[in-house]
Amino acid sequence: MKKRRMIMKIREAIPLYLQWLEKRGLKEHTIKEHKRFLFGAISHSSIINKNVNQLSLADVAELIEKGKEHGLYGSQRAICVFRQLLKFLKEKGIEVSLDWRDIKVPKVPAREQPVLEIDEFESLMANFPIFHKNAGARKMALCMRALCETLFATGMRISEALTLKREQIEEIEKKKELIIRGKGGDERKVFFSDRAIYWLKEYLKQRNDTSPAMFTNAYGEALKYTTAKSYILRFRKKLGLLEKKVKFHTFRRTLGTYLFDRGANLKDVQVILGHKSERTTLRCYIKWNERKAKKNYLRIMDKIGLNRAISD
Image (cartoon, rainbow, N blue to C red; front, side):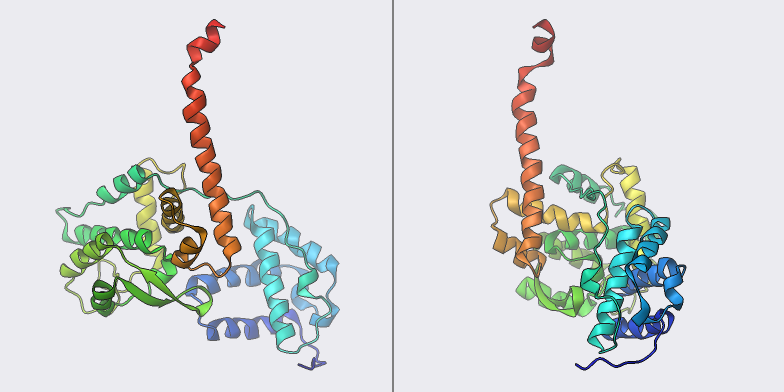
């Protein structure tokens, strides 16, 4: 595509970029995260008023500094969003002075990626107050139990699960699988266990609202991510799982670990989790292998005994 020579400032490019993100059908949470840095670090730097064909690496350095105001991973995220913005402009044929591929993403400490032991998962599930005397609390607890059971069984992302429709339960029960629109708008197949189907049906049986959404809040409205997040955080604290920083994505990682523990191969896990690249699944496998190695080390070495070490 021939590049168009036109004067466009970054602040003029941002609305076009956001429109493009929305047309791609990205989830509300993803777009919100882009806006956080477009209207945060990027808008608060001198880049915002610069022409797209007058950018330099000095501007990138400034953006990295501005990104630090958004926490440990702020610089990394700000640069990733900026790279995506420049990539968008290039694909639209607009001449920019920086190639997005030449902008290096800042390195940050590796994120902790907790997984639940099976007994921790069972404890979390069993503690949802599905028999609460208050009808609203009981309904919400059952909704969250069904949602978390579904996330663990299918490996779906929370954004994917919250788009499920009530009417899909028939297909799920019949086929134990479903075609969903996943990350990036691509279709993929997810699988449901008998256990997950059981909890979905138990939850739907007590619904008395007319919402088409699979999961709803206490008022019968489609469940929002923020509502679900606040609920799970309360239970994380109650069960003493704060140190593990359990989030909805934890169920997805826990499934991957559970499958590897029981002999699933890389290709199986890649399909089940919907990874586009085998390298992503390989990273999961490496993490699993590291955890397994630590467990084996402690199992073997702890048998030596502290008393023996002291007496020696």
